[in-house]
Amino acid sequence: MPAKKGSKTAAKNTVQIMKEKAAARAKRAKKAKSSAKKTPAVRAEKNPPRKAADTKLAAAVAAEPRVYGPEKLKHFKELIQGKKKETMEELDSLKESMMDVTTGEYVSESSNYSLHMEQGTDAMEREKTFLFASRGSKFINQLDDALARIETRTYGVCKECGLLVPKERLEAVPTAQTCAEYKNTGMPCERGRVALAQRKAGK
Image 1 (cartoon, rainbow, N blue to C red):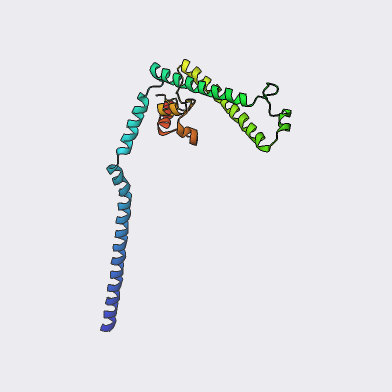
Image 2: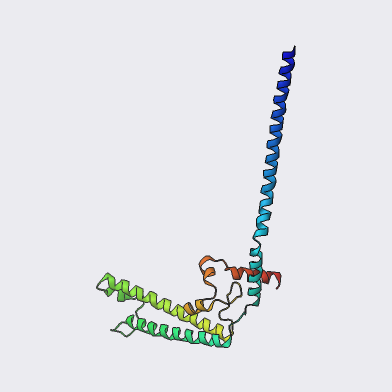
């Protein structure tokens, strides 16, 4: 009989130990879960500068001028007029090369002139000349549009977000009407997104 009592006591102790271990594991798991929930909040407290940076950017965008001043517009006008003169000279040279020396008339792509070409490479060169001439004419039209925008003081204003296109981009591409990022990706730059959000909010 005493042996049985001892066995029961031992079994009871074993069960008790297992329960205590299970309770300890549950407690640790609960503590770990609680710590995991608190971590993002702690990180947010340690890294609040992002909000400050956004506020600073928004203030800077709101304070930006929306048109270029007379001096800069004059600078762009001179730049564009120089580009136009240069392009027109190149276009005149191309037109001369497209002229039929026997008739003094410009040769169209559909004319019989191509039937008398001695070599295929001549036809290819002529096609290239027509292509360059077409591009030159298109560029001159774009330059004229840019000059018209200078007169109305809308030159350099991004047609997507309303901010000024950077001076460096306009000097490199005087016909540009958007920033490079929008041109390449179809999405406004960070400044542009802020400006659009401000416009939507009625600021």
